[in-house]
Length: 340
Image 1 (cartoon, rainbow, N blue to C red):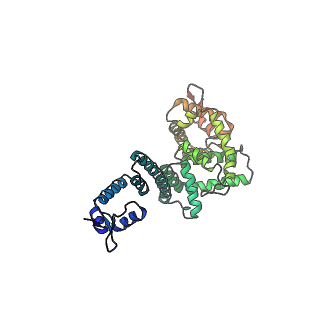
Image 2: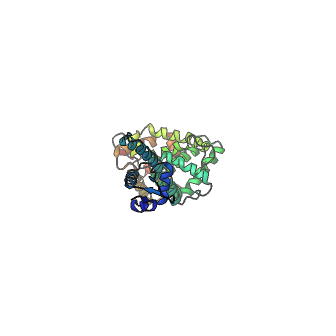
Image 3: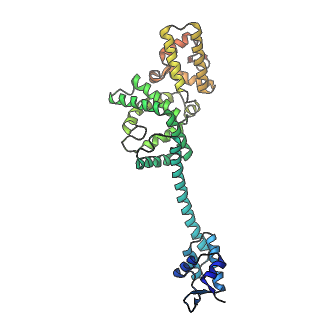
């Protein structure tokens, strides 16, 4: 007994509209029509529908299925291979879309104030971030930017002011800015040099106009003249492994200690205060080097020998000389620390 389109649809769990589409595309033609003009199907049609449903369940497209039904000589393995390639391409597209949405979600969750400023520019900037960082890294960078935005904005303004006044990169003023710049980068990137370097690469080839941080290539180029001198001085004493091992998140504490020692110098600290400052010096040195005596010695030697570091580091010659008079170990003779 022939099946009407409605009967076939109910039996196979398919819509009448889909059967009409199959007829129009040649995927499944009716065996004939009733005297009233309605489409009619048979048991072979049921089998064809089951085949289509099974192949669709494997992810094959209707075009691929139609090709197979028209030409039984086509190998199923060939069609499946082509379908898998198409699926792989779609998965790659969806993964990319998911990554982009993840970056945008991270930006929204961070609460950064610049997100709604200019959507086209914001999305372009986030794409640049995505090219250098994974979603978790972007989320961390943006969250820490939110916490440091005021301090970083003030630093960027100070650097731009020095650049506008043509302050020489090797000067004490520029070297202090270089120390603050490197310290801020390490605090912002949570002491991760690799991420900080990738952030710098993000700005290579970027548009001259400032980004959301207020930075542009001219400001970066200026301060990097100073930071290159600063880093080169450290590298004369420290290997890459040494630099990686240092705790680079303690710069704010070094700045505070340097300022406290200078106040003690100006006010004439009593023995108790002097002893406390010397103890803080030793404790901070210990934390910075993770208790590594050899690394501590290299750091002290660099501070002792390098004028560039003396000009920019919070523990300048005046601070070190005062600490030495308090009996603190501020030099290294290659074997033991000494205050002599």
